[in-house]
Amino acid sequence: MKLDIVLDADTLSQIKTTAIAAERMGFDAIWTPETRHDPFPQLALIAEHTEEIELGTAIAVAFARSPMHTAYVAWDMARYSNGRFILGLGTQIKPHIERRFAMSWSKPAARLREYILALKHIWRAWQYNEKLNFRGDFYKMTLMSPFFSPGTIKHPDIPIYIAGVNQRLCELAGELCDGFHVHPFHTIDYLRERIRPWVTAGAEKTGRSVEDVTFSTTVFTIVGDDEKERAMRRQQVRMQIAFYASTPSYRPVLEQHGWEDIGEQLGKMAVRKQWQEMPALFTDEMVDAFALTGTWDEIGPAIKARYGGLLQRATLYIPFVPGENDDGWRRLLDAIKPV
Image 1 (cartoon, rainbow, N blue to C red):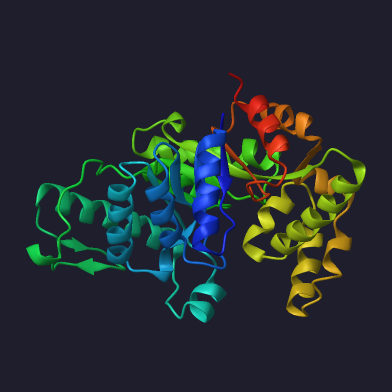
Image 2: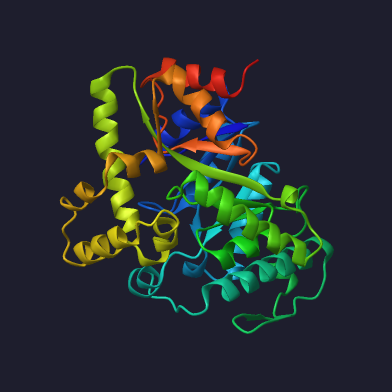
C-alpha cells in the first residue's frame, strides 16, 4: 500500500519545505485539494523541488474550468514533473458550482464523462498533431492553430482519477479512469459492498477489470500517543464527519447503516447554520464506523487491516507538517511500507 499526504500550506516557503521533507521521508505522493487555494500552482512548485514523489490534485473541481483550461494545465504539470502528475477531478455539488464558481450545472455524471473524453481528445491532438474536433452534448471544441498548441511531451498518458460517492461516478471510474478517489466520508461496508462493485460494473462495460483502477482514499484517523491527544482528534473528526453527513448527496453512505434519519436532521441543522450543535448527533459507534483510532504505532497496522485488498493508496486526514511529530509519521511509514 502506498502512503500519501495532503498538502496544507499557505506560502511558497511552506510548500517547498513540505514537498522536500515529504519526499525525503518516503511518502509516495503529495495531493493538493481545492479548498482555500487553486490546487495547480502549488503543484508546479512541488514539481520543481522534488524528483521522485508523485503529485496530483485531490481534487480539482472540473466544472469550475473548461476542458481546454484543464487540458493545458495538466499538460504543463506532466511536463514540469517529468510524468509524475496525476489529474484528480471532482464534480463538487450544485450550490458550489452555481453560487461559488458562477458556472452552469446539469447532469454531473454525464457531463464529467464527456469532460474526460474531451481531455483525452485534446491531449491526443497535441501529441500526435491531429485535428481538434470534439463535439459533444456539453462541450464543442474545433479550433486549435499551431500557435496555441503546446506540442508533444515525454509523458502524454496523464492518469485521471475521479472522486465520488454514488453509483454513476463509481461506474464512470471503472469505465474510463485510471483511479478513483474514495471520498473520506465512507465506511468499510460502503466501500466493499457499494463502491467496488459499482466500479467493477463500470469496468466491465468497456472490457476492463476493476484491477485497472487504483483506489485511493483519505482516512479519518484518531491518532495520538496519549488519551488527551486522541480525545482532541476524536472531536475534530466528529465535527468533520457531521459536516459531510449534512450533504444530501452523501446520504447513501448513512443509509447503508440505517442512519439516514441522522442525515436528515443534520441537513436541516446545516441550513440553520447550527454547526456547533451538529457533532452531538454522531455517536461513538458512528464515529468508529468512519474513523480508525490508535497510537502512531497502531494506526498503520489498523489501516492495512481495514483496507488491505481494497485500496492501493491511503492518506491521513491530518496534514503533514515538517517538524511536527516527525517521529510519529516515520513510525506510520515503517508500518505501512516496511523495508
